[in-house]
Length: 425
Image 1 (cartoon, rainbow, N blue to C red):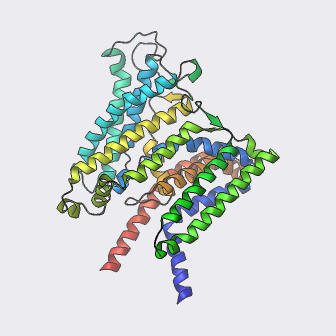
Image 2: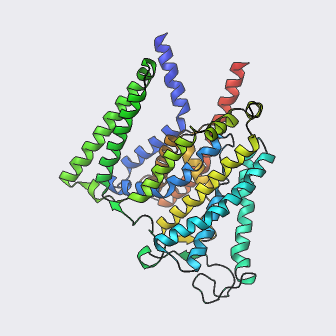
Image 3: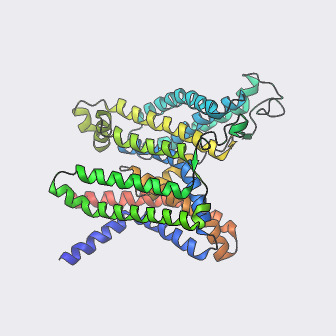
């Protein structure tokens, strides 16, 4: 019976993490069949992690509040891009330009989030479909603003580098310029950078301290027994990572050539992780959880369900606007009419890869999903080249994987929900 129980638990765990395991296996196979070096792969992966994590983390609060996967974060991304265009039009940049773009985007994102949240309250039970439609509708208004309003209604000089030669509309590609020359490119990333190996040691040491504090705070014997194994595993992993970092520094191996870590960008991602965890422990966070579990019970308990859901959407939209600004300063170029188009899809796919669902999402799932999803993006062309001799096949494959993982994860969630309801009956 114990063996069957253990086997049953293992199968359940595999079923719960099937999407994550598929992507992990895909990455391992990609590294084994391709000719890419691990240091190159690590450099590409960490670069994508810095620029995409903030956007993926912005999805957590709506999921907890029962709004499902908020494809509507594309509206927040548009708010961020409007602010970036505004800043570049007046030729502002550097840290002051970056902060001003965040300041300009915030009220826009609050307004967009409030309007979107009100719509979600009118479409209860269909929020994910509504969020997709909101994205398409907002994209039409966004295109109208930058293709027609700028230049026809809002008069601008035709010789401005942001304006198309005919004097109507914004150019399709906008160079954000280098931060040291008054631009936004790397304005955040270049504030402070440290070697990758040093960052490994610092992060591992911080996690080690955090694990020790958590273990010390588990007062009861049951809590200590429950968390002892994971704590030991985490401590061992941290010690191993610190050892690898120290050895790499002394031996000057390939890890030392991995691109430097932008300290401020990483600290902002960590701050968002901490904020997400802390807000869930507040009264507002408990309201999010209560509304997500049962709107009817939450309403009977005296919680203003509509207001709570709108706050969740506003928070997500504002974070998405900031995340898009972080993304753009890292890329250095604004694709005016397409940069926001796939933000929702890629962020949703990333968090699903980490093991999240339409009703449950955590910080760790968002970060793991971002790592594995971007690892797939990096390795797809390499696998296509190594296996089929054509990198283009890998490009098609990763597009298929984006939509496939969303469909598969949602289908798996519905199947589990139906199975659970049948067992309950």
